[in-house]
Amino acid sequence: MAGQFFLHWNPVAPSANQPAWRPNLRSKAALRQAPRRHFCDPSLAVAALGGSPDRLLKDLEWLGLLFESLVIRDLRVLAQALDGEVFHYRDDYGIEVDAIVQLRDGRWGAIEVKLGQGQVEAAAAGLLRFRQQIDTRRTGEPAFLAVVCGSGYGYRRADGIAVVPVGALGP
Image (cartoon, rainbow, N blue to C red):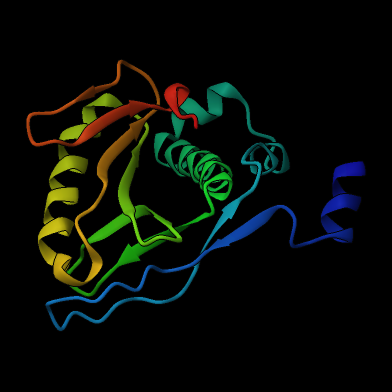
């Protein structure tokens, strides 16, 4: 009952907008500018739907979306301490990035969020396609490209992309 009262009393608190990143692009791709919505606390969605660990493990796609919300929340907290913001990116060519962290001084980095280690290769390929699409003469080179995943070890791939377990995120 208390959770229902909180949700009714303050409907904005359980989720937050993640605005779209607006870089200068070389291509004529139309950018999708609508903000994405994430839960500030993904456990609210699980509790509201009567979720359990067994049910979550039977729907890994939904668990991945909840994990993404968790990581975006953490990135927002970390970026805020550095006077930065967290955006998302998607264009009409099908290129999308889960998080662009940009600091006020213009430095930025791109992050893909994947629950499992088996998804790192595809996420890294997507980040490399994204990097080719961006006009770095105007936006500057990315300070980093990274894949944040649910577990495993952190390392830097030969292509320069960092693979970071969520437990290693920090200032």
